[in-house]
Image 1 (cartoon, rainbow, N blue to C red):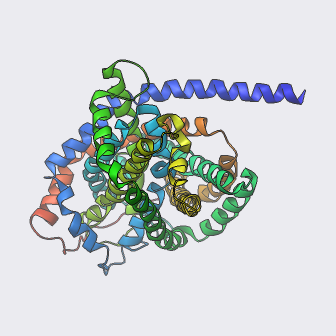
Image 2: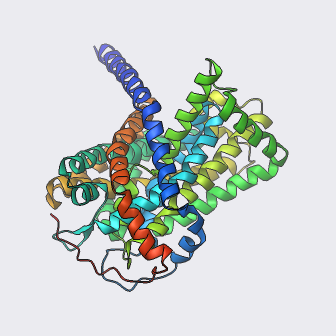
Length: 469
């Protein structure tokens, strides 16, 4: 009887995986790819390539704004956003992308990060301009408020909030816990339930502190974990230096010719590399999803453009730097070590780091676990704000209970289903957010012209912040 129930359970899981895979392929077809990359390009053009202000954005990290409009510092808001962005998608997800679309997916992932800086700039600007103050005196903002207050479309705002609350479990919870459990089991033979218990308890403890507690933890974790991981990548590249140029050529060849993608004609292979790379790039930096804007809305900043510049640097770190490093490391490892194959997917990063004597596997495990913890915390805040928009602050505590329980479930779930679920949720979130960015492009240009192009970046925005729920 037990065996029959178990078989039925796995058959149902396989059927659901097939359905979600088909829906993901449809959702991430040409229409969404064109809309996403088109929005990136359009915003880059009308805002006069805001990526060129990267150094100015980095300097603003260390400038404290003397204003009471906001809950956390601009730097802390960026750390919360980066905590949510830099996770399993930057490490395990790049390997999954290479397995599905070939090494060429790395190029499209990287390009999505570069162009996505303009989109993240726009999301941060609109988040500050249209944020509200809730009954507890805390700031609430993001695409749902932009859609409601900027476009007078409350139903689209509600749709985005629903997609965000659901997507949070995929991109920010289930996939993260799953990746941590897999890595700890592979590296140290720790059972999944052990990882689940510790990660669940840690998440519950930090979430009690609200956004301030989450921000404090993220401000410590994010710089630490990024430096550790980047050092590991640089060490591998140093050891495999002779393969770096061949790896870059290999990535570019696969991006435009489809070489090494699994099966099909060249055009179909290029499409597979593009679709997989763009999807993984969005999963990594979330430019176009609108989720990071929820953290931007909580920042203490004197005007929307200052926060927009800080926000725009997010994709630079998590995709242009970290995902690119990961992709090059994996490709050099594939070339240097015949026992490593493009088809290894989720294990590809683990295999690459295992080539570092003694410290490789522990270093990757430490990086991944810290990435996972911070991502779960960052996305818990995004989910809370989405639920708060839909039904007020009374929904926050029940959501936290469900969130903590989902951390445990994610650690012991089936990884293929989890990743496909996350891709589907991402696409649904992107649609209403991209609509708001395109429809309010005039506001973006007007605010950028006034504060940035006319050199008023130090001016204070005295606009009244209305009350929310």
